[in-house]
Length: 311
Image 1 (cartoon, rainbow, N blue to C red):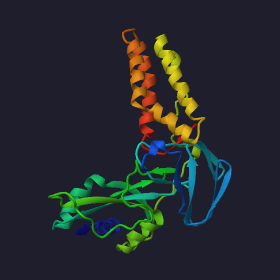
Image 2: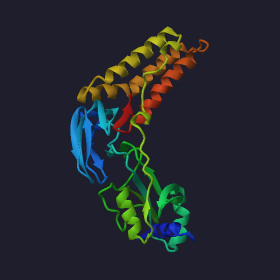
Image 3: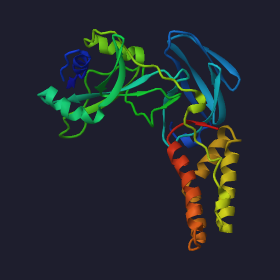
Image 4: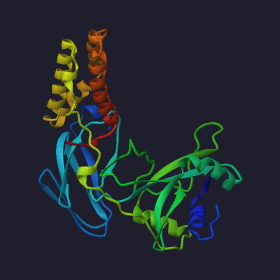
């Protein structure tokens, strides 16, 4: 099985002249690796518990489902640990360091370079990089992420940071001649990979952490229930929101049970049944839909992940 290496193309890009869980909803906890890829020891505080994480290391930590607080570098954020509707993995990145999702293509075909250029194009992104002290943007089959909570379900990879990228893969489908795989790299490992492929320039990537207060949050605390004029719809949605807010007071298995009920088909059907009661009255149905869609968006955006930042 032939591995098409894009690293040779990367060397050209740097040149000045250039060339071409079993049942996740029934559990009560979730475990995550808290990673520290930096050259310095860091202190992270989870719900008042101090964790000293050595340089270029990490720790496994088990979170009960529910609301938690993470503090690092004199900043704090609130987050929810929850079941995912599918098995999910990931890591916690308190330093907001860069990680790289690198796509590699494997093929059985000849004419590797020509085929590679055609097939890899949809995975290419312009990436900011510092080459010999000069900031540039070049195309690579790479996605750079620096989220505090890096979730495999939203940033898919086949091989995690400590898993090697294989030299070959097995094609399982009849007639299949190519396969793409994604590996998650820490920055230092990604740079080492580029250098081992022949990159001779001094390279690094911009470090751009944001204040915790600026990070994206998921919340249903600011919905205007009073905009729903239909009494039946307004009362139903008030109760539904109360159930959501009560959820965040639960922990462990109680959280999982309440969460499973809130995202169930039965609950969705009840919401739409209540919506139908308000149909036909001018403006009321739309107001109900606006509130319901906000809740549905938050729910759908977070169903497949275990962690998200909240108020």
